[in-house]
Length: 220
Image (cartoon, rainbow, N blue to C red; front, top):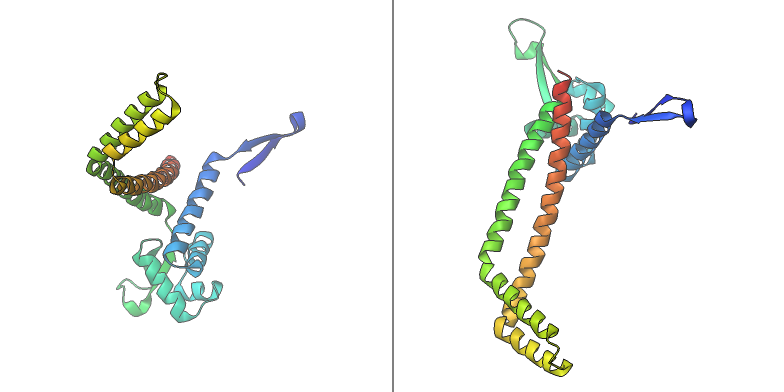
């Protein structure tokens, strides 16, 4: 439980378990990533391993109500993408394949660290791309800023009537930016907005996973 009652005075005292809240949100984000990359069945396996701990393939197949083929393929896929881990347990000291079984499990701390590292790399790439786009369009941006400054001065000129202002503004706009320039700047602005939104989402996820990792380290 994220919110717990700890007393009865003043109608009841409650406390928010911040660590639990971060853990729940972290798990939810990971499940969303798995669902986006694979499907909801893969999420079912991931959630099952989180709840039950170490499970054999046959147990996953039974508890998740999947066919042997589907269970095997999804386990291998999740393992290959590092969303789950496997532990080989030998019945004898020789570790013979016939006498060794595999236990799948989720190491949430390791997974959070892996995803945090990937998010940081992606975030860096987004920032680099955003800055590169701005550098590529620097001359157009400067021309637009100069044009806007001139237009602002025209609009503030009390000696001009409205018709004269409109005429001069139109002339300035035609002088500084062509139709193609305006189209390019519009695409640039849309692209920057998309990159900034992506950057904000990545920053949010990076903070979430870093908090989870910090809490996990404190428990060691």
